Image 1 (cartoon, rainbow, N blue to C red):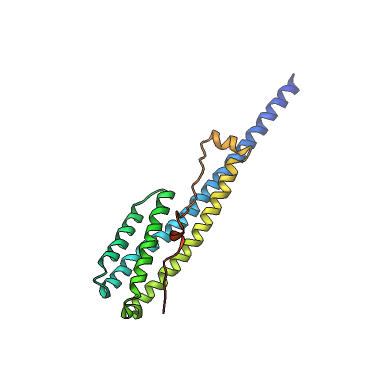
Image 2: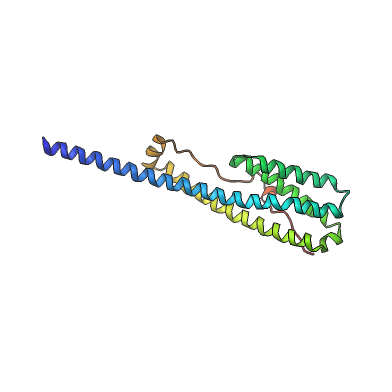
Length: 186
């Protein structure tokens, strides 16, 4: 009788240790996803901070391009105030399109293209776009690993019991949004 009780207690302890190990692994994966999102957020903030300076620089040369400048300002405001991965992906895509239109307008102003402040802002924006791309790739890789773990057996049992939810990928909605704003130095 005592041996049977010890075997049962041993099995319960093993099951508890197994659940704790899976739970801790799920927490680690979820934190990696959060960290990856934080990296995107840092780069998006950097991008948002560059845009007012870019718009002000362009405004000095292209005052009659008010519609394009307003579209960039509006898209930036929407992107800054949007929350949630899917909504933010849409807002950032719209901002990228508005920036692309702004860069096409700049082509009509040779003096602006030669302005050192504008060139520095273009370079900084290009660098930031690249960083966003890398951060987005890292985030999506982290989400894929996390979602794979919480959907795999037996982790899905523990994940379901403790309320772990699938994470959303940071995906742009259409091909035009996948393009970074065109920055030309010619």
